[in-house]
Length: 381
Ligand code: CAA
Image (cartoon, rainbow, N blue to C red; front, top):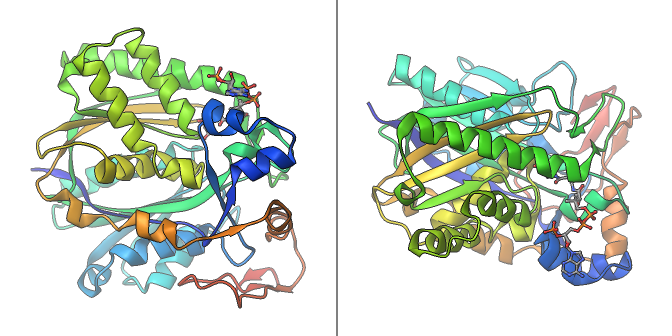
């Protein structure tokens, strides 16, 4: 039985920051941000948006009335959860109007957990081919104003349906997961921003990619020539380049040229949105599907990485007509409004965060389908 990704949709906020303007305001050469890090724009999050509103907005784009009735399990992957106990998935399930007979759960392991969600969903569908599982990766990446990580912030959600006879990507059986107790990036319960050992985290990422990819090759006998493209978790687009180059070295042959071109196609949207944490790999897959040179039957490799740390390399085979099962990201991004650095700083500091007071946000400027109105008696509205 073929099982895999049937439909995908992406949502982000309506505002973005130009990173050349951020560089100027931080007294940094803009080329460091646009070339050295590989980011041009970044999603800016107003207080009226959070992982629940973003996750629900992405899922709303792919749900039809019959799907709403038929989703059997909702898995929300996030590392920017809004509650230490209650799953964000319960709020999202309510906003989407899903059937009450739905299994609903949140998963956490930094940027990796959406991949675990997909593998778990595949297992559920293998047991019962009638199941349709909705997996949502939703996050807000915050490092803090004036920090080295600031340029690698971002926000957004990718929603995916996992089912039998998928229309986008059939998942292949060999998959390699790898985990180790490592302190490269973490966020203690009392912190609203991540703590990170930036350079170390990039080295661990590359090490985990090489470990999982090498073992995948040993298990399958596949070589780079067997791939139409490799996609990567993109905390910033240069990271994907570092990952790919770590196995290509100085190869300049046809295969290496193809993989480099496809990597550029997979980076288009991340350059303009920033890090989505759990959703980053899947936004890069969507970017590849909409901007790369691909054909049905092509094999695509996916490298998922979450700090702390866990990696997984797995693959899928592209289905005929996959283009029709993705939302039009280019059009959505073109409709966003640019905000100044001062406005970004104001919005950054007005998110709900650790605030425990009653609060009501002004939502007049936010045209998103779902709005966080504030909080009353410690309950989000
Ligand atoms: N023109 C062009 N390039 C320039 C330049 C200029 N004027 N000035 C600097 N650069 C280049 C540097 O040469 C460097 O390139 P290489 O990495 O290819 O050598 C690049 O710009 C970055 O410069 P620095 O190394 O000096 O940057 P930095 O000290 O400011 O830190 C960072 C960069 C470590 C990525 C930092 O932004 C950070 O900590 N980010 C958050 C952590 C992160 O995203 N880690 C990724 C792996 S962990 C993960 O993937 C999980 C997750 O999502 C967090």
